[in-house]
Amino acid sequence: MPDNKSTHTPIAVGDGAAIPHKSDVGLFTAWRIAFFGSIVLCLFLAFGRPDQYMAIFMFVPDGIWVTFKVTLGAILLAIVFGLIAGLGRISGNRFINGTASLYVEVIRGIPLLVQLFYIYYALGRFIKIPDILSAIIAMAFCYGAYMAEIFRAGIQSIPKGQMEAALSLGMSRRQAMRQVILPQAFKVVLPPIGNEFIALLKDSSLVSILAVSDLLRRGREYASETFNYFETYTVIALIYLIMTLFFSKLISIMEERLNEGR
Amino acid sequence: MKILRTIAATAALLAAMSLTALAAPKSIKVATDATWPPMEMVDANKQIVGYDIDFLNAVAKEAGLAVQFKNTAWDGIFAGLDSGQYDAIISSVTITKERKAKYDFTDPYTSIGQILVVPKTDKTSKTIADLKGKKVGSQIGTTGAMEVKKVSGVESKTYDEIGLAFEDMAAGRIYGVVCDEPVAAHFALQKKEYKEKFKIVGKPFTKEGYGIVVKKGNQELVTLLNKGIQAVKAKKLDTRIHTRWVK
Image 1 (cartoon, rainbow over the protein chains, first blue to last red):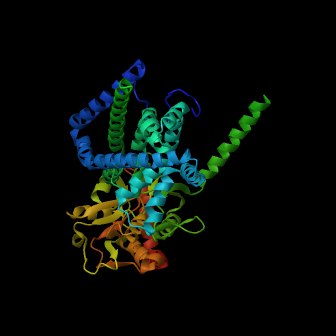
Image 2 (cartoon, chains in turn brown, purple; image 1 turned 135 degrees about the vertical axis):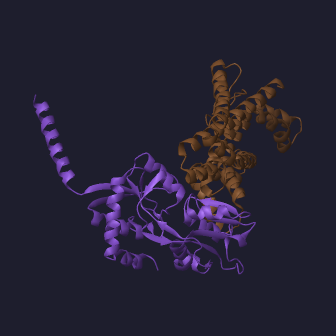
Image 3 (cartoon, rainbow over the protein chains, first blue to last red; image 1 turned 90 degrees about the vertical axis):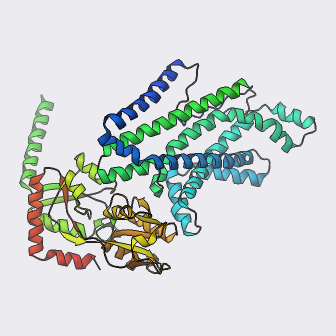
């Protein structure tokens, strides 16, 4: 953890899929083979073996949409949770610091699957939250804790001199944090957040246990009535693979753009 | 040499043991999804119990089989049969045309129907069609789920376990649950937390028969089990099991 380092070293969090980088030739080719290979395979299955596979492709699209909604909603909310908790973790205020640290410790100590059940069914007894929203909240609550650590490390990776300089220019701590530290920290935390996004996309398949009709659940529904387990899970795996590879690429392009602007 | 002799002796012993095993009743592994009370469930002692369990034990006794139960999640219970993880399924499986195309069934051993459970606050709904525009829950891959999907305009929501569907209805996220009638009665009429909240509406609206499922082509086991079922029915053991579990 580059806590007290004074350089802009990116934080390595090996959670998501490997995001291809232009300099990394081998990985770039692997990405291409996997991405275009799975698209070609999907097309081949859908049109080459329509009687077995076409029906599956017709059955799951609304599930893809739900998976996408859950992932996007959860990552946005997790960034908010993470930023608040991350700032709390470096706060000088003992109470705020303690609360944020407790949140991070407790959440990181409970499996995501258990948290999903807990927020959905246990809290469902007291508050009424629609199913997709409670799935999003549960995912975001969990990922927010991991995100908090990323933000904390990101903020702490910015040289102390920056804060000191900002303060000596007459800025308040809050101003300095908002206008000097955080903009730089965002660049540092973007790669790990990208990783978290990909990891969250994959973990979103867990919400299928909450009867949320995501991609995996649609697949399970199809398989459980047709008994075509092999065909169905082949398609589901391919669609997840295409999605994660597509977003990895998107994130790496975003990163390159950000680095150019530096 | 000594080692070799020990190995030979052990091998002989093992062979003798397997011979005696052959003489004992043929042992079969049977999968059941023990989340379907009162038909199959896990009791306080972590034992798999219920109507189906008692019934199959009685059948096995008549047919000269030894049964070993394996608690298996419903979603994928058929896939496990495909891959040979067990020899049969007894898990309130309705005999349907689609299932019969892929698997072999014994003769039906009991008949039931699908029924609708709604919150007590719902004073008007009588059928699934009355819940148009609302979410109705059922267990994934069951005949209940198929009935819900048949009704257009109703949003089908499928759960891994039927208990989770009832819990979701208690939380107000869905407005009806469709499942086998004995299971509906267990949840809506006997469970303390739900008795006040839910009610069964109307009568069962399908006619279904449960069968024991085996891998396609396993005619030998089907014949054995059918013989057992006939014997159990002839001795009226099934009515005794029925009164024990289904209230």
